[in-house]
Length: 213
Image 1: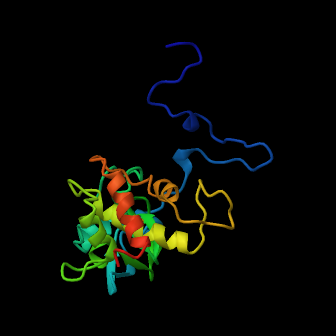
Image 2: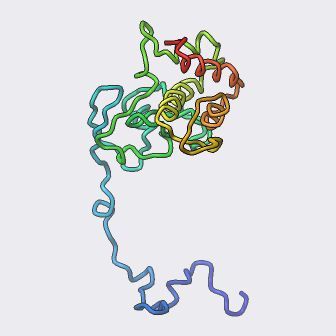
């Protein structure tokens, strides 16, 4: 053992009886810290009420459960897809109080009392949402795995533009104009491995023009 080194099993903080911080009181080593039972530190499960696609659901979930897993595993709404689970592919996009969010990056318990819209809530087989109809007519999908996220993101994008929310490519922050460039920028977080991007843009532009309504 090299001179001055510690045995592998010894933690540096347990060697000292007290650790002094400049300008502050001494702190105790880990071995002397009081133990806090997990039942007191973090509740095992918490109640949360979500309005999903117009219906209220009161759930009791682990506080670590993402909104994505609550939708898929608890409510069995499997239209919302789990792709990368790191917020990089956009497959898990849903609408939260009308604004698009990545459901894999937010916890279910953070949204008590809020309204969630998934792809199942956009339309029905008998009455499609205009964007769903446009995606079919413009062949805006192939394998379909990313399509739920693409649809929810497109709905959110049209709303953002209508409200005048600027994007990275908006030339003037107080003048948000609808364009293919705006769509490509705003939808760039939704990955399509089948590369149906031109058809997706065409479908969204169709709906914006009113032809798909």
